Image 1: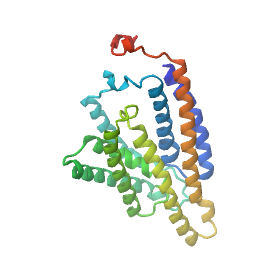
Image 2: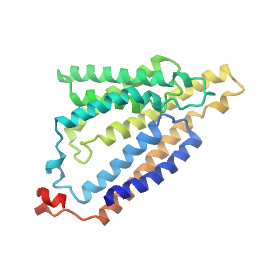
Image 3: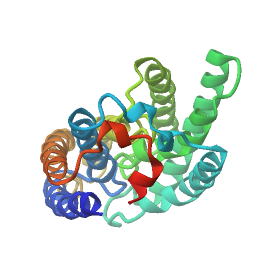
Amino acid sequence: MLEALIVSFIGTWVYELNRQLIMRYALDFGGSIGIFCFGGFYGASISVISYCYKHKRTAQEHEVRVAGKFSYTLVGVGALFCWMLFPFLSTDIPASLIYYNQAAISTFYCISACVLTCVGLSSLITGQLDLKDFLYSPVVGGVIVGSSAGYINNSGGAIILGIIGGVLHVFLQRWENKIKWYFLIENNVLFIFGIQGMIGGFLSAIFNKIALDHNSSAYPTVAPYILPSQSGQLSATGFTIAIAIAAGLFVGIVINMLTKEVPSDHYHDRAYWIT
């Protein structure tokens, strides 16, 4: 309880500070930078500190880290909700941005392209469909497109973005199976949210440049006041990663100094963990 309180309390304050900074430099209504990139690197940093400080020798052996089939069922239901609801996350965009009415459909196209890419590539590589590739793919598509949805003016750009996210996700899953990062493997907080959000933030600078050039030629007197610059998108992504890692390392150190280490002779005693 104490660990969760510290993580959520400090994380909320740092998140809001970072969000206010992002609003000054970038357009991020879908949250690739401010929500997913921040949360991914923040959570991953805390996990690394906790793993090294307390559980380095025994965390991978504990019984509660093994998920069952019911967990995959819940993930599948959540993935369907993400597929349906992520487009609405990208619609809160000022009407002065000429592409605002295409943000939701661009998000849907990106998620669909990501799902199809993950299914096809996973089946091609392994000879069968990897369930994790399929279940996580709607989330990956929604995460990577968030910062770009307001800039994309055609379905082709959204589909390309979804393909990039899907290819990256499948190969990250293969890499994860080899490196066995046990402190991150349960929820993929770094690979699905941190990395995909970072890539989405960087790619949003490209779509920003395309949209800014188009707006400048169509509306030369108002375009500079509608869109931020591509350097703003890159800067927002960069300082979000730095702030999230710094905050995560600080919180990780604090919670591990304040909480009790589990003795090795009680590690497999379920009653000890409950009490």
